[in-house]
Amino acid sequence: MDEINMINSPGTPLRKAQEIMLEMLIEFDRICRKHRLTYWLEWGTLLGAVRHKGFVPWDDDMDLAMPAEDFEKFMAIGQTELSDGYMLQTEELDRGSGVCGGLFRLRHKNSLLIGALDDFEKGYCKGIAVDIFKEVPYPTVSRRTFKFFSRRINKSHSFFRFSQKLTFKNVISALVYPIYNRFYLLLWRIVCIGRKRNRMMPEINKATYGYPTLLSDIFPLSEIEFEGHMFPAPKNPDARLKDLYGDYMTMPPPEKRRIHAKFICPDTADCYNNFTPDK
Image (cartoon, rainbow, N blue to C red; front, side):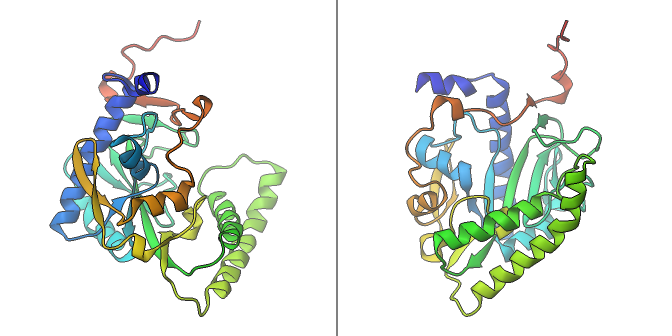
């Protein structure tokens, strides 16, 4: 365990980034409490709270969730409520970011976190981020059925979020995927007709894995410790995490304990102080 914790030991860029994300979470929590908006820790952040009482040691992002109504309310007030140094990011507010479709981000303006899919030719903010997902109700269907639709809808939706190389395959995909996406969305809506919507998860175009959780396991919300603070969590975190990850308490093998970011700079003023070009 000591070897694992060295990944984000004090003073490392990753640990500094996690400290900034915690500050952003506290700011988000302040606004939500002020306006009585509902949210909770989600995905890997909830996993970290349960398994580590804080960040998963190698985690370089943060995930939160909100019911659709509260999600839209925060979108309307967030930009004016956020303190200096933070911004609300959507494709409409920050062109080129690709942040759309049931997701918005809080960005830290004075830092830099470069992911594999970031595009340097576009000038959108690339600061340390917190992802907030819009959660919507789902009917109970088999896991196999949900996986079938979520993978196909997500694949076609994701293609247009990022710049693609001009290749024959991508040209054909650009022509086919809009039809493909609408076709599977229509089929999914037909499958949902007449079924009681008693589960909840992010919109299906963001549901890359996992399975919707029973509303009775999410509400009423509980509180959970995260990095020494208490934040909202699903009523039954165990049920939620099993729906997302299965056996979530088993640590992944060492080769999967990796940081996803390609570059982390917690303070842009220091980004190049220790940079040494390749010889």
